[in-house]
Image (cartoon, rainbow, N blue to C red; front, side, top):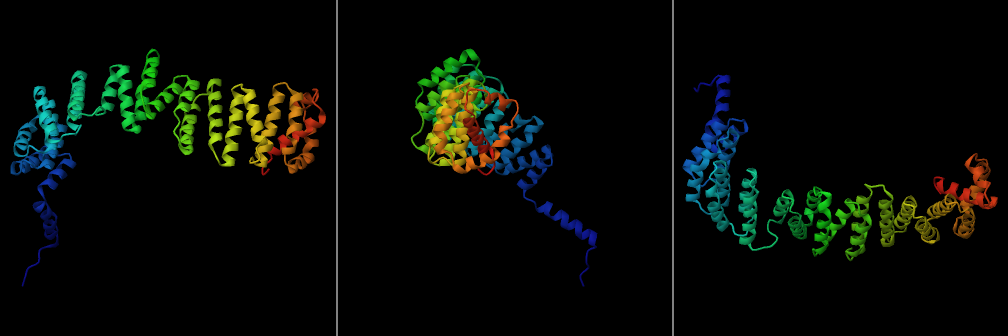
Length: 412
């Protein structure tokens, strides 16, 4: 008859059995996760003694030694790994970082040479070398590493973002302009990084940057030029540059124009409001949807008026009021806004004539609704009496007030 273990002893056996049978890599990683870096390092070393080419163990040893500031102790394992498996790029990366930590700077170029031969066409060896140099604030060596990588890989756009950032740090704006242009041509997603870096340029450096971008080819450097002009106080120049380089399709043009419009809205000066108006007018011209077209025309008219370009505001409002595709409410609103603009300009006679001219386009229902409210509108104090005292005919005044009231009434 078998004797059964006491329950507590059985539980202890079950708890300790997995630890005895645990995989060394898993055990080392668990120790590392718990912060027992010295113990983890010993387990990783034991694995590497058995198999010097175990890259995961080498990387684990690097992770365990780094928090203890003992990375230089990994050099024997690195040399053994390279000797056993000289074709593994990951091993060279660990070695480069260890050499840099140990201040064995003269050994790094030779290691990079070997690494580059193992992984031809890969930028990583040169980027890692430069990163190690920049950690010591050695920009000269970092630039040497980047340029050597470009030379050996044989492509003019290799490491362009890195060279561009280095040029910004050194305030070498011609080089920064050239390299950022190369970077955004290769990958347009770098545009936001380029804008952020160029924002560090002092005002006296900006004209040279803009001139440099004007000489670059391609749509992406051109977009960079537009964005920088808009940010640096030249919205009109930005608009002209953008319109010269718009893409072919209407959908793509709308996307570019809307992005530009959002950027302009961060400023409220008349110069920016005027360009906002021009951009919204350009958007209206490209929309086929009648509601969108009407909305952008009305917004353009308001922006023109805010910028003091009242002639352009009137032009937009007339286009909106006379367009058969414009909805009744939008047409009434445009008419009322146009007449109101003329009144504010001190042109009551023109306002009356404009209202009479636009009257056929205004829906009859709007005027019917106004007729019911006109007595109330006629009893307006202050501003109403002041306006009626002008030379503007009373009947025309009442009709304009009706149109304005109907345009602001919900559901019209």
